Amino acid sequence: MSGKARCVNGVMTVDIHEMYAPDAKKYLERLLKTAGNEVREIVIVHGYHSGQALMRTVRTEVKSRRIHHRGLDMNPGITIYYLREKQP
Image (cartoon, rainbow, N blue to C red; front, side, top):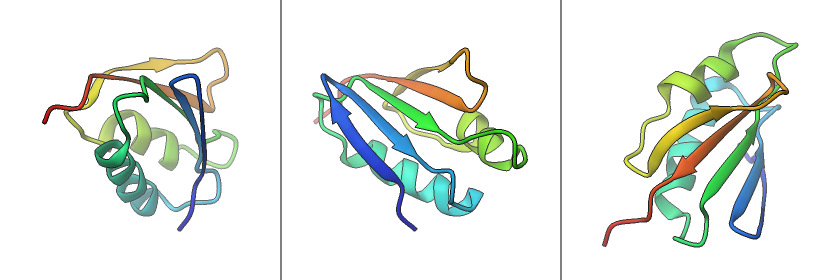
């Protein structure tokens, strides 16, 4: 279970194409817990041609107090998490 993640200027991009939905949920929830305050957005590339399970998981099942709101991209295979600052 390994998503490809990179962070540039406060925007972290994560590719979870090859993950199963339960693994992606755990991975993203852990990532949200460990991401520092310098991360303001997480762009999640989940795809949509190979089924809807990952998209549904990313958009409705991943829970974290850090997620201020979720945004959609023009590309339906991408979801964006806009984050709150981490509380001490």
